[in-house]
Image 1 (tube, rainbow, N blue to C red):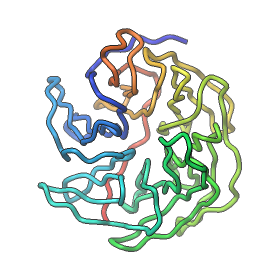
Image 2: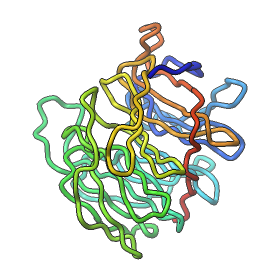
Image 3: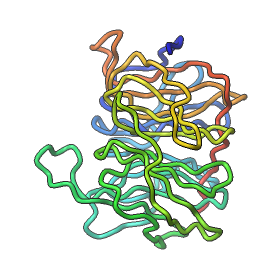
Image 4: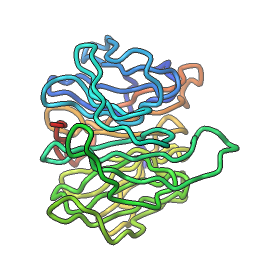
Length: 279
């Protein structure tokens, strides 16, 4: 299906980590160009974290500032950086999400995913419970990417971009994961960033596929929305009613010179609330 997409910003390398503040500002990163930015409703852009490269995931922090990935998972507030978790031997961290308790789930990369000659080494998803305290809760995801929890927080969805599938785990009351299984795949691209709506359906950016796919809880395709970009990298919900779908990319099919772009359209199902980090 097609949708009417409005272009909000362009001119970036690879846009990732879209996250919306309570006052309607969109926070996002440029993985390749570096930096974390904030797009205001009036279209102006401010720098939140200068130059930081490899930021695939962003969460707001309850005490202000942002939690971002990269070489480590860090909390940046008022120009000060606090390391939340460092793991020796990691190639970097990718996408992340939070739960109602404010803990952070983040994908750990074990190889340089942008190096075509790098030997793929499966990574993990870690749960960060407090500053300096984290545990690997899932294993065997080759290229950890988009990650999100179901509205009841009993299910963890995780894109494995290199394998071309979204995997799913069951979560117990303590946030421990079990029962790894394939959840969904789509022939029109590979899964990247994702978000969950209030009905428990999963919206997945299909990198290389030029679309966002909404998967039902049983994994079947409920809808597939064409996007004016080929390399679609992530999604989030925005607006007072959470009916704005924000889609970000590493290119622009309308005008290739515009490069990585941010688009917005309206949908008929609201996104699930996203909680701030509290670690």
